Length: 190
Image (cartoon, rainbow, N blue to C red; front, side):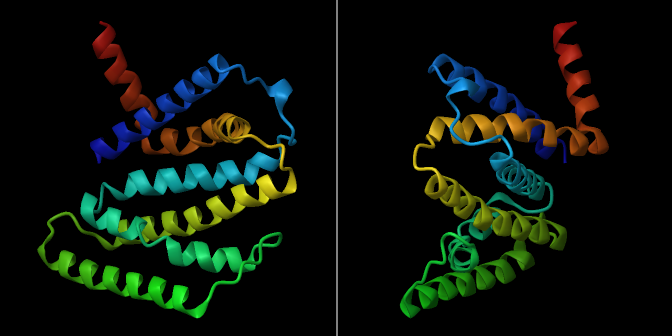
C-alpha cells in the first residue's frame, strides 16, 4: 500500500512539473479558447482514472493491471458510439476483435488469480473502474477538440491539470497519504 501511496505523491508532483513546463512553453490562461467549465468533467474523469489505476497496484500485480488496461479498446468503442457529438460506428469485425481481446484477458486473469500472491477482487474492480473512466476520457477530449478546433493540446493538458490537482486532495487526506508524504519530506529535510 505504501508503494501505491508514494505513486500518488509522485503523480501530483508531476502535475506541478507539467504546469511549470507548459508555462515555460509560453502558454497562459489568457490563451484559452474554451471556458474552464469545459475541463471539469474531463479532469474528474482523468484524476479518477489515475487514482484507480495507481491504487489498484496495492491489490494487483503489475502484469495483471497492465492486461486490464490494455483492453480499454472495447469500452472506448462502446462509449464512442453513445457520446453525443461523436456517435461513431465500427464494423462488426472490429467489435469481434475487441471481444476476443477481452476474452483473452479473462483467461489470463483466471490463471493469474491462481498463481499470484498479490491478486484481489478489489484490485480488479478498481482497474475496471479505471478502464471505464479511460473510455470516457479519450472520447471527452475528442468532443472538446471537435467543439472548438482551435483548442490546443497545451490548453487541454494545462486546464485538466489545474482543475484536476485540487480533486486529488480529499482522497489523499482520507487515506492519510498527505500526512505520510509530509512526514517523509520532513525526514529528508531534517
